[in-house]
Figure 1: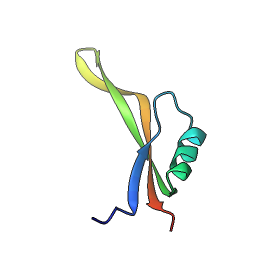
Figure 2: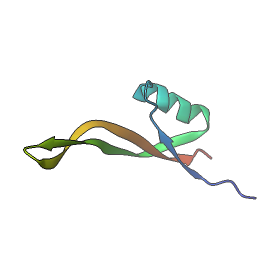
Figure 3: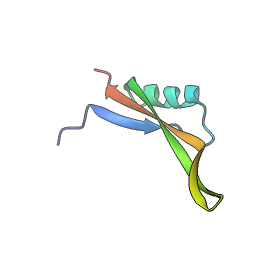
Figure 4: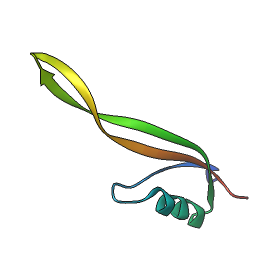
Length: 66
């Protein structure tokens, strides 16, 4: 079975971006795209639901180094 040339890595909760990039390189991949996704929390203000950003998830799309 052929292994995929692309893989997505997520920066861990207590991991720096540099540590994640080192982990990517150690597994034989090269980052090609960085994606940031906000994480929201629902807050009730004046009887209305309001969504406030509380964090973000950082993902790297990578490709296998040949």
